[in-house]
Image (cartoon, rainbow, N blue to C red; front, top):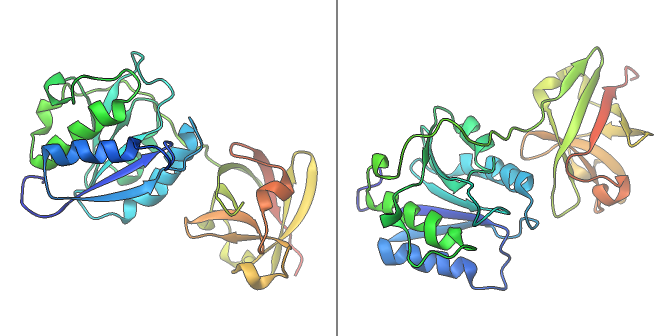
Length: 272
């Protein structure tokens, strides 16, 4: 899949920020192993050590990449410990990163995956830093895969790994127990409730009743941000396919005083 002369795609997702040279070092190591590579930076602004936020961004973004893309994701609070380093081969793309659950929601979404533990030290960039496996382990392995290395040279297949999954909504009669998966830079509160969980006939001109942190809030369910006046709270199904709470030209997370992981109870009114 990766041994031809076409331009290979290698993406990066990290919490490294943009003021250091860390990302550039990873790209330089990759280029020292194989060329040409088209680099795509998914994000380097993941909140520090926030594995679940990184998992959501990866899960939301990777399906838009072409088949054969390789993705290095490094949000790694346990770097230097005995945690494993993984390569996950899915039916369409390849995921590389630490064994902390970050890669698993995306692997499930892509489907039919096989997990390898990175164990072939001849693939590493030496000397290996205890604090920068993104540069010295994950990226070199990615580059060797792009160069055409057979997967069986990575290391043994792995059946035990951290299996992070997003919380599933729970339907109880006319109510849904939901959770906040992610808060984006606009303050939109992205939940785990999908559009197909709500009956289409309830979508037009209806209100959602939300119980969040012991507060009961009525929110109109609309199609666009400007369906309400500036500064007004609203709910809609966003570009990632999940129900979001938003404020037209405002910050819903701040207004609701919620963050990633917050739970809430939702029901749709029967009023016209």
